[in-house]
Image 1 (cartoon, rainbow, N blue to C red):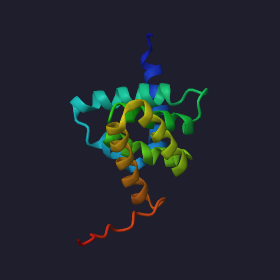
Image 2: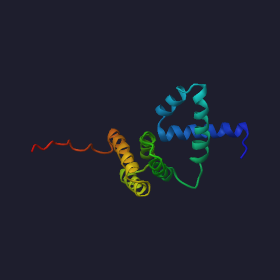
Image 3: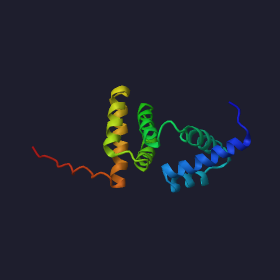
Image 4: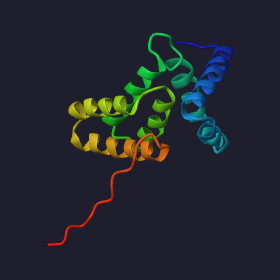
Length: 143
Protein backbone atom coordinates (compact mmCIF):
# COMPACT_ATOMS: atom_id res chain seq x y z
CA UNK A 1 0.00 0.00 0.00
CA UNK A 2 1.44 3.34 -1.03
CA UNK A 3 0.43 6.49 0.69
CA UNK A 4 1.06 10.07 -0.25
CA UNK A 5 2.51 12.50 2.32
CA UNK A 6 -0.85 14.29 2.61
CA UNK A 7 -2.56 10.97 3.36
CA UNK A 8 -0.03 10.21 6.09
CA UNK A 9 -0.49 13.68 7.57
CA UNK A 10 -4.26 13.11 7.64
CA UNK A 11 -3.82 9.66 9.23
CA UNK A 12 -1.53 11.23 11.84
CA UNK A 13 -4.05 14.01 12.57
CA UNK A 14 -6.97 11.56 12.93
CA UNK A 15 -4.82 9.12 14.88
CA UNK A 16 -3.54 11.74 17.31
CA UNK A 17 -7.07 12.95 18.06
CA UNK A 18 -8.35 9.42 18.70
CA UNK A 19 -5.27 8.38 20.65
CA UNK A 20 -5.72 11.39 22.94
CA UNK A 21 -9.44 10.59 23.34
CA UNK A 22 -8.85 6.95 24.28
CA UNK A 23 -5.61 7.05 26.26
CA UNK A 24 -5.92 10.56 27.65
CA UNK A 25 -4.26 13.75 26.45
CA UNK A 26 -1.78 13.84 29.36
CA UNK A 27 -0.31 10.43 28.47
CA UNK A 28 -0.20 11.04 24.72
CA UNK A 29 1.14 14.58 24.94
CA UNK A 30 3.85 13.44 27.37
CA UNK A 31 4.83 10.58 25.03
CA UNK A 32 5.09 12.96 22.10
CA UNK A 33 6.96 15.63 24.04
CA UNK A 34 9.47 13.11 25.43
CA UNK A 35 10.25 11.59 22.03
CA UNK A 36 13.65 12.46 20.61
CA UNK A 37 14.32 12.15 16.86
CA UNK A 38 14.91 8.40 17.22
CA UNK A 39 11.68 7.71 19.15
CA UNK A 40 9.59 10.10 17.05
CA UNK A 41 9.72 7.57 14.20
CA UNK A 42 7.93 5.12 16.49
CA UNK A 43 5.46 7.77 17.67
CA UNK A 44 4.61 8.63 14.06
CA UNK A 45 4.09 5.05 12.87
CA UNK A 46 2.00 4.22 15.95
CA UNK A 47 -0.13 7.34 15.60
CA UNK A 48 -0.56 7.05 11.81
CA UNK A 49 -1.15 3.33 11.39
CA UNK A 50 -2.36 2.01 14.72
CA UNK A 51 -4.57 4.95 15.64
CA UNK A 52 -5.10 6.78 12.34
CA UNK A 53 -5.72 3.71 10.21
CA UNK A 54 -6.78 0.69 12.29
CA UNK A 55 -8.62 2.34 15.18
CA UNK A 56 -10.56 4.79 12.97
CA UNK A 57 -12.11 2.16 10.70
CA UNK A 58 -15.91 2.00 10.87
CA UNK A 59 -16.67 -1.72 11.17
CA UNK A 60 -15.76 -2.22 14.84
CA UNK A 61 -16.67 0.27 17.54
CA UNK A 62 -14.09 1.54 20.02
CA UNK A 63 -15.49 -0.61 22.83
CA UNK A 64 -14.98 -3.79 20.79
CA UNK A 65 -11.50 -2.69 19.73
CA UNK A 66 -10.59 -2.10 23.38
CA UNK A 67 -11.70 -5.60 24.37
CA UNK A 68 -9.76 -7.10 21.46
CA UNK A 69 -6.67 -5.15 22.52
CA UNK A 70 -6.91 -6.44 26.07
CA UNK A 71 -7.19 -10.03 24.82
CA UNK A 72 -4.25 -9.65 22.42
CA UNK A 73 -2.09 -7.91 25.02
CA UNK A 74 -2.87 -10.78 27.40
CA UNK A 75 -1.68 -13.23 24.74
CA UNK A 76 1.51 -11.21 24.35
CA UNK A 77 1.92 -10.95 28.16
CA UNK A 78 2.35 -7.16 28.03
CA UNK A 79 1.26 -5.98 31.48
CA UNK A 80 2.38 -2.35 30.99
CA UNK A 81 0.29 -2.04 27.83
CA UNK A 82 -2.63 -3.79 29.55
CA UNK A 83 -2.53 -1.12 32.27
CA UNK A 84 -2.63 1.61 29.62
CA UNK A 85 -5.41 -0.04 27.62
CA UNK A 86 -7.58 -0.79 30.68
CA UNK A 87 -7.80 2.99 31.12
CA UNK A 88 -8.63 3.30 27.43
CA UNK A 89 -11.24 0.55 27.69
CA UNK A 90 -12.99 2.35 30.55
CA UNK A 91 -12.88 5.56 28.47
CA UNK A 92 -14.46 3.62 25.59
CA UNK A 93 -17.36 2.39 27.71
CA UNK A 94 -16.13 -1.11 28.57
CA UNK A 95 -17.42 -2.11 31.99
CA UNK A 96 -15.40 -3.75 34.74
CA UNK A 97 -17.45 -6.92 34.17
CA UNK A 98 -16.66 -6.88 30.43
CA UNK A 99 -12.95 -6.40 31.16
CA UNK A 100 -13.07 -9.36 33.55
CA UNK A 101 -14.82 -11.56 30.98
CA UNK A 102 -12.40 -10.53 28.23
CA UNK A 103 -9.43 -11.41 30.43
CA UNK A 104 -11.01 -14.72 31.53
CA UNK A 105 -11.64 -15.68 27.92
CA UNK A 106 -8.08 -14.75 26.95
CA UNK A 107 -6.71 -16.68 29.94
CA UNK A 108 -8.31 -19.91 28.73
CA UNK A 109 -6.65 -19.60 25.33
CA UNK A 110 -3.37 -17.93 26.39
CA UNK A 111 -2.60 -19.73 29.63
CA UNK A 112 -2.78 -19.08 33.34
CA UNK A 113 0.54 -17.17 33.69
CA UNK A 114 -0.45 -14.66 30.99
CA UNK A 115 -3.94 -14.39 32.44
CA UNK A 116 -2.62 -13.83 35.96
CA UNK A 117 -0.38 -10.98 34.82
CA UNK A 118 -3.29 -9.45 32.88
CA UNK A 119 -5.65 -9.67 35.86
CA UNK A 120 -3.07 -8.13 38.21
CA UNK A 121 -2.39 -5.25 35.82
CA UNK A 122 -6.08 -4.60 35.17
CA UNK A 123 -6.99 -4.80 38.86
CA UNK A 124 -4.28 -2.30 39.77
CA UNK A 125 -5.62 0.24 37.26
CA UNK A 126 -9.30 -0.32 38.06
CA UNK A 127 -8.65 0.24 41.78
CA UNK A 128 -6.48 3.30 40.97
CA UNK A 129 -9.29 4.73 38.82
CA UNK A 130 -11.81 4.18 41.62
CA UNK A 131 -14.12 1.97 39.55
CA UNK A 132 -13.41 -0.98 41.87
CA UNK A 133 -12.78 -1.32 45.56
CA UNK A 134 -9.41 -2.66 46.69
CA UNK A 135 -9.35 -6.10 48.25
CA UNK A 136 -9.80 -6.30 51.98
CA UNK A 137 -6.52 -6.38 53.83
CA UNK A 138 -5.09 -9.85 54.32
CA UNK A 139 -5.00 -10.87 57.96
CA UNK A 140 -2.25 -13.21 59.10
CA UNK A 141 -3.64 -16.16 60.99
CA UNK A 142 -1.47 -17.19 63.90
CA UNK A 143 -1.06 -20.88 64.49
